[in-house]
Length: 428
Image 1: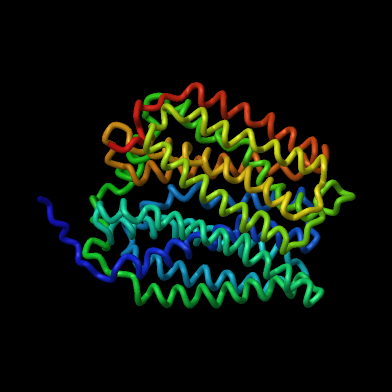
Image 2 (image 1 turned 135 degrees about the vertical axis):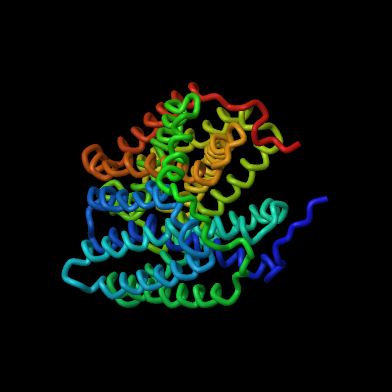
């Protein structure tokens, strides 16, 4: 019997829920709240899609600096320090909104927040592995995912709803979003202070020993990833799997907020918080949980095509919404729930495939290679989304959503070329 020598420290329930909730908040702020805020401030769809797509870049390139988290200090310090930085960045957004050029200044702050958040992801995931035994890591995977999704609901639902209510009350979108970001900054400062007290101090949480050949070791991790058999097909799948979704997601919120005369649904900001930020995220979470359970029963090789169909076919609901422009919030919420539930199912297949790539051949660099996979995943979201706003402005919402359905074809082509190990992902 192997005995885990790690000190018990604080119970995992004392810090895992708050750690992963706080990991999700800055991501949803940068990726979703920024889109809603800029739309409320009158920024065009073309500019919104272009500028906010660039904010994916830190998550794309985070594998480049991930070894530094191991080499420079304890991960606990990285986690707490980066949370204070994120809190400061949130406060800076509130302070720069009334400035003469709020788009330029807030984008600069969002860039800072994105880099801090991407680095926090690396440190938090590494700390999680150090603080828990392998058995406990597996037991709390579902808890991690649940509280990350709750952060999405809080951001896309609660905070968007708050912004809408404050706009109605004050008559000023700038003031409303200042309040939202001030509340977020104060909350994040409290969370950082809490983690400075609550996070355990694992014995293994210290800087990694240096070999004297840091650049050689650093480059070997990357070269080993790109030497894998079939790497071209792997990269094509990672980049193209969400080619359609990357474009659609950038225009969902503007579509809901745009006036009906412009082809949108004319919803209030708080209605978007309910339909997309709450109902949609709950459906996404349920789809992800069901997808994980199905893969654990049947294996990825048997379910890759059914899960892809579940992900891509519901894109058609946005064609129907754009064509009919329903006025009932429950109809919009139901349509969003269908699309997001399917997306949750299909995204599970993508995550399990990345695990398979990272673990191939008893790989000693699993963590770094998984980070590389997530970097290509983020690149596959960033590049297609950059031109989505321009395309929609040229062809209108109905034709844009029809294009999003056609744009699913490259992911099916990429999936036809990959190899999946029989039974991978199945328990037992």
